[in-house]
Amino acid sequence: MSNVTNVLLCGVGGQGVLLASEVLALVAAEEKAQVKQTEVHGVAQRGGSVVSHLRFGDLVYSPTVRTGTGDILVAFERLEAVRYGHYLKPGGLMLINDIEVMPGQMGEYQPYPTGIIEFLQSKAFQIEEIPATALAKAQGNSKVGSLIILGALSSYLDLSQEAWERVIRKRIPPKLVDINLQAFKVGVEMAQARAQAAVDRAE
Figure 1: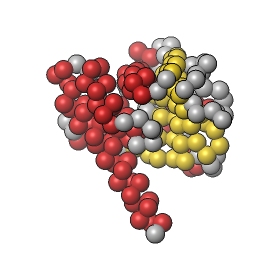
Figure 2: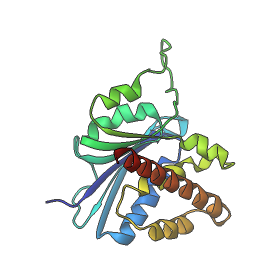
Figure 3: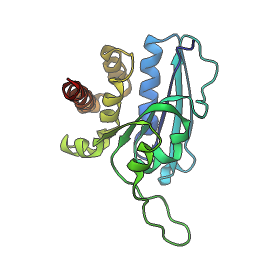
């Protein structure tokens, strides 16, 4: 039986997807035997789609998550969850930042699709929406949304909080460490509060 964890992170250029993927890879490398990662970011600088595949466990042969085998999909924007949802296994977990980023337009204008969350729910995925962008703005820096997302993600992975903090301190520039650690903590606390609320409802 495989003990490999398969994670995809996706969004658009400028949202911090690649930084988040790198931090996750470094944390996993501290606590797991093998980590493999790959990414595609084409015209990311212009707001194009960005996706990073990351796999970690005792024995990992390939960095690429096969279609229908992903354990967790982390979408930094709603439409990207639809774009890469087919990588998730049945019942897989989607963490979705609840913002809408309009794709670049070519030709006739097309409005942003509606009913995205309902569509994804119809596929029987586990879905958690994260108000990461709003929470980041409340922290005084809209750029720390990726760390809020990582904080929420950490609650679903068997990786120690100590490892997360060590990597964040190493990877983030010193002058920005404190606000990023605080953002990470906001994400952790939000996920923990939701988990406790779910337990309370079940009782």
